[in-house]
Length: 307
Length: 293
Image 1 (cartoon, helix red, strand yellow):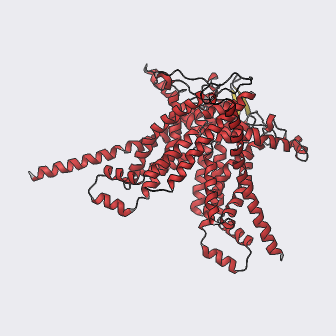
Image 2: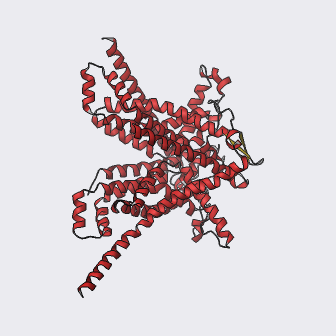
Image 3: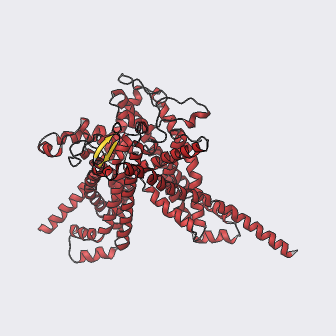
């Protein structure tokens, strides 16, 4: 009798645990989603490489009618805009992080971090709208008047409303500064107080102390910039709105309009299915975007482990 | 004043200037959207909230009613899909000790946050196309059309899940150990214990939802190859979820790039509506995340 009751009780207890284990279905769903994304991108993206071979990434051509696809111009546009954006963002983010930690009083620090989070909460399409009608006309005006217009023979000239690779780069830098600032700010705040005290006791000025502290956290700064670069590369809508969407094989001419991989995908969504190989070409580009992101993540995890 | 001191002051001044330059655009953007948007909405009030897009090239601004409806449908559907998955997964990952599946979800969701959202939409599209072919071979029809409100909601849900998940996981991990021990020492099952802990982190749960909904609301890229967009009111019937649908974000994108003056003006009005909701959700999540009750 007693044994039976014990058995019953353990069965009951087990049942309750089965109920808990049902939750694991949600975890399995998440794993399934990530694996599916990988498989779909790889499976569909590979088809364009079979058709075009390496010329998919070494030539500049995009024609549904001729069914010929080479995305060098978009790949180049992506790397160029991301590179310029990250160079501007590095300056702004380091300046902001230093100002927040070393200059502002503590009540203003909380305000600054709220502002950072707020800028991340603004939809990217609104950045795009502002970029198209407010920012890029200003930049277009700047690069169409001397002294910058003297560079036109080398760097090209903007499209209507000032759309250009440069406008896209600057808009991107505005959008990624909050992320970089947040990471740099946190590692700056983590430097122990006694290091500050030791540096000041040597008779160094504030600026000299700050420069030494920045050198001290250079790995975090690099990490912050790499992660922001990943975001810049994947940003779609805002870039598609200000970059001008022109097939520009000379993607280093940053005063002229161009494309990035993500903005080319966005620009083609309405007619992609009309052509046989355009959908595979779009998946091929998504695969490349994904691999760039993966590469950045692996690199970041390596340098942050070493640092 | 010696040169070192002068150099120091100048250097710090440069840092401060860089800070001002980096925060100025956000203020400017919010101000411009409010100024332009409110004058557009005022010029056709309250019709702007329920009318359809006007004919191009006219003087009328019309309205963005179908886009608002589309956003409401897409975001609520996505929330219904994403919330249980994210919550259940977070409970399992935190309450099942040393589980490999729990560790995997924890790692993968953090990677998912960094996925470009255009890739998420494309993957859903690609998956549904494959499903079309596979089911077609055995003579069945894919229940989810690739250009539909449903596929758009699935894409948005995949964007939301990691944001909700990470918030709730962090919340559950921050439950004090003595409370956790007290709950389990009463002999509660893990399900019961999880329910009690979820009640304890109620504020975090609402914050997580506000962040997730705010994210889904502002997304454009995942909708390109899924919801596809539509400028008219859908017929309200059972098939509504199986047809393409518009959203505020797609509406702003397409009208802003259309080149027609009155559509561009309408996109500013739509931007103001979208920005107001985003900022409201942001404030809600901010207030709640500092609160326990």
